[in-house]
Image (cartoon, rainbow, N blue to C red; front, side, top):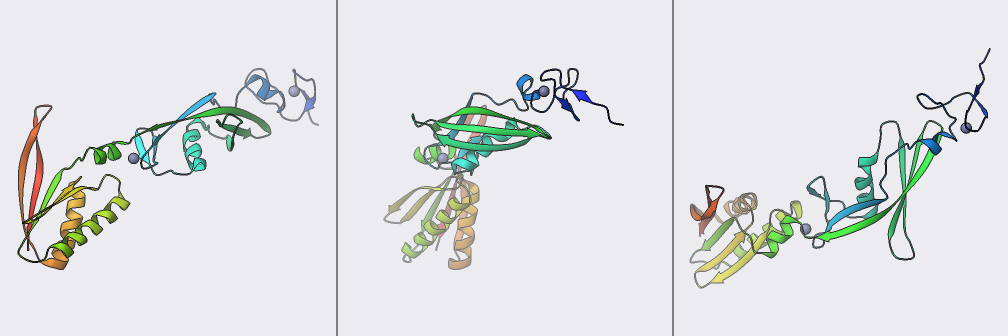
Length: 226
Ligand SMILES: [Zn+2]
Ligand SMILES: [Zn+2]
């Protein structure tokens, strides 16, 4: 024998009702409850230079609008709720997202408008300000042009791997070249190419550049002689 259950809202007979105290049918449930808590407006922060997206304080490699929306809305997802996104641009060129949510036989949808904020990420800002951590000085009697080219090529590859690693500037002098590098990591990658190909003499020194929170801050100077 099967017990009949009646939804108190629509009065229809159902096999399954949903909810804790006042149980409703799958159609009435979403009129009283939300499956997901999705805000009317969602802000997405992008870097205007490299196009990366800021998520939970990190700059991440999500470049397509679809992936950016998936990332931004993932934080509204709930356990056991299936979420599907639909997005489009309206007449005023505002991006809108419709979130389709379902749990068992309950279905609901929510709409949000997206606000894209453009700013500059820390790495792009550092690049623009000519930031550097390591000064690599290339010196020698030989023709240094091919060595310089090898350094520039290796630096570009390193930047492809990580935006934090970049060649901020190159200066050519009578006695050689100076390369301004953003991190010790990119410096190491370059030095290993130079060791493999040119057998250089490498010396390190440190320049005191100031104080930060009571600690002395140094910049590394690497002298490469061929
Ligand atoms: Zn009902
Ligand atoms: Zn950037």
